[in-house]
Image (tube, rainbow, N blue to C red; front, top):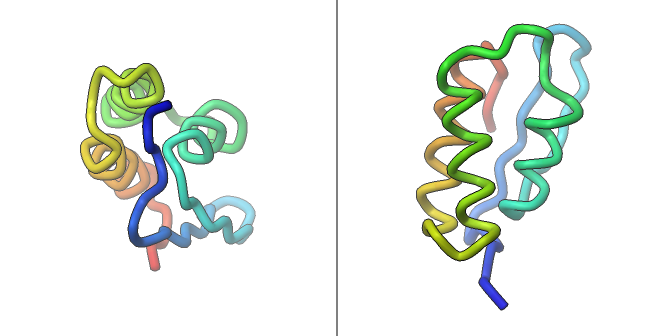
Length: 81
């Protein structure tokens, strides 16, 4: 099984709802991207979905998925802790 846990969790705050989520794994990141993202989906969101999906299949590294997720969160104006 592919290890998809991040060494450092991310806390993100949705700019529309104020809801804070802690994301610790690639699977959690993929779920947030798919179900809990603001209405706007830019190019970084689409890239993060692809990279996270690839990481879950063992085709990319969890660290690459983390970077892509952070880029998508910045693009969507999430507050990152």
